[in-house]
Image 1 (cartoon, rainbow, N blue to C red):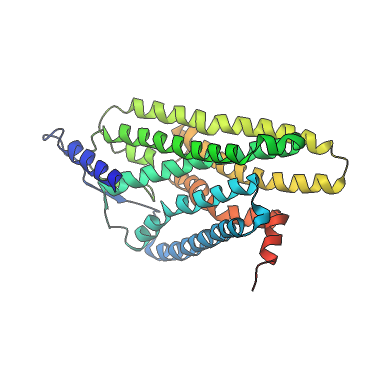
Image 2: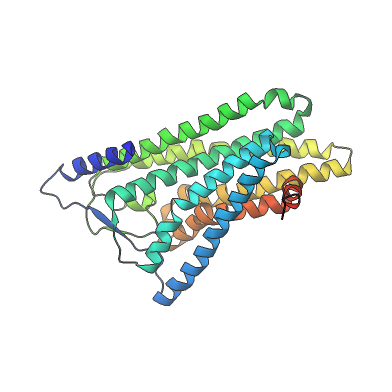
Length: 321
């Protein structure tokens, strides 16, 4: 509520900065440049995937909350990931579905900026959660005797709160830097949601500071965590190879490989989208990459974890029917 009022005040101030300059109060999301019939096909497909995302992540969240056997640090972070994935997909998909049914319907300036903020916050939080999950697996496999001491509940909760708080303020920095810029016509965003790089293309002022902050955030939130994750899993792989029990190796590798699938899909598509030179990716390619890290990844996470995780499958079997 307070954040909405804050946004409206900033938007009002933003529109009155220069009365001689044409400003934008609404945006049109161009979405996917396909035929109207294909719009209906995409609506049906994305609607089903969105329902699966909500149900899949909701089931994992419910299983972890209700099953005492899953009250461990690993599944605590997994529950946080499921919560972020539900919020992450919900920040963009409903807008995309509405746009597929009515491409000409405008989006308000405040609504667009709010969507940009929520998307950034949940995306950045997911980056840190995947990093924490890799650290949890590193401690569990490489330092099993000290696991309960290192990954205590106090530490886990502190890490989760820190990740949410840091990304709340980092996303706010991006939005405040965006709001300081004047926006000029035509008010058309060539994307299926208010993605920050696409919104910046509508500005008619120098945006070097915005791009520098985005680049710095990519280095520290994408490249940095990805490097730590790769280092962690290199050490995990060495530790797994030293396990004498074949069953132990299989269990450890199954748990870690599912995490690596999520990491590869999310960090790979996001890094290409934000770190690759603009000339190498067309706007349509950027939309496809955005689908992978903003929509397909939250959809696939429950499938990956449920099919490759024995504890989750066991909890599902024990559910009363």
